[in-house]
Image (cartoon, rainbow, N blue to C red; front, top):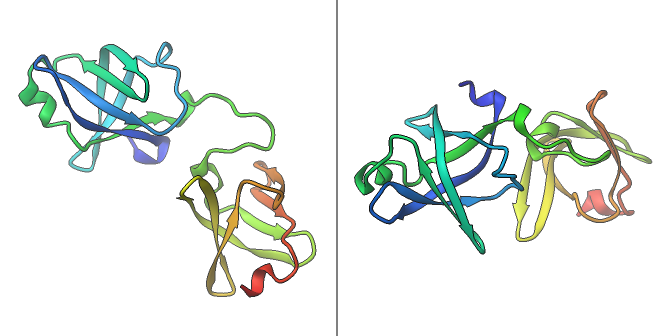
Length: 169
């Protein structure tokens, strides 16, 4: 599977028990009732793994993959990133976006005009930040809060309203 067609949703944290189950950390909202398989990153390749069964307790999810029947086989998966196809993502509300969707979007300030393109979306504590290359230097624009006024996925543009002096910081 081509990595560009997928998005990362978590990783395999550790082995759980003796029969091949693993504990996974899921970083995206996910409805396990609709997911039948994941792609695990094994030696820089995405390999499909089918879910035999899963259970969740509080903030942990335990998954038993088909054909992974021993703790030794499960241990080989430890640390592997978990991916889903982008087409399997839930549709978001108007104005919402997945982090990887906006890479390359032009950011335009209502007063200053074009600022630059989004090079990354990063997490800093509880805050998500747009990383924008502005005149050769990096600026970080919070996604939460009043800064983003609109997102146009068709035109690949994000309109922001930055406070006075924000770009001089």
